[in-house]
Image (tube, rainbow, N blue to C red; front, side, top):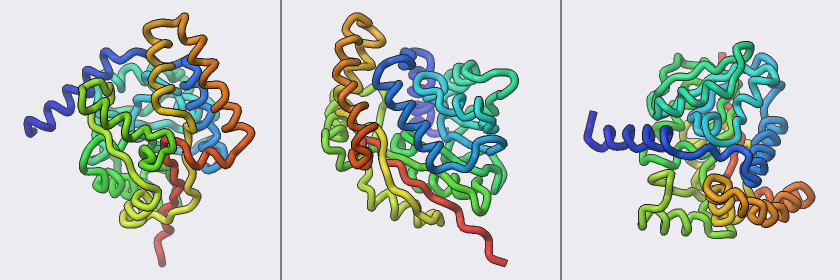
Length: 264
């Protein structure tokens, strides 16, 4: 293993061990509602659906979206580069609906071809350079006729979140390490090169990235102020519910794709 690869593994292991739990923050509840809508609107019925998630950060620290799907009958699987994150993620699941999880890399998924009915990958593949390799791996393990929701940071976020994250990365204040963003067109073309058929193109989290970060910081380290940030989050929750057009401009792109059936 190269020195860079070792450093990458060490970084995410530390994140898994030390990062605070973001569940319960107002912006996290908003995030979870957005993810649940994506599942409801774009995936088949969850009962019996074999679904793979390409990281387990949400299950350990954030929205617990895969546990939500498992509670509705989905057969949940996931990988994460961080072993501490994998261990924590499993605690969100019950014995009746366990998580099939492994420490692994989305760039080399430890599964056979065509293993899954659906894949959910939001906020994973922008954290390393070999993004196209990861997308090809997702296409490999998805069964013909299967579907996926794949998302990355929106380069054209109206609240300029990519600029904020770039500045925070430059000064060492961004807790998620290296991160890049994509235009909708660049994401579409990358998915098509991997062999996916692109369908609905939407986004989630129409909210200033700075407000999301502030809300999480207050939730984690200054709970009295979290009441104030929750009040600031509320208008964006209201807009999301009542003005659906704003969803397309959220700071995480979310593109629904299918894997074509094999021809006879």
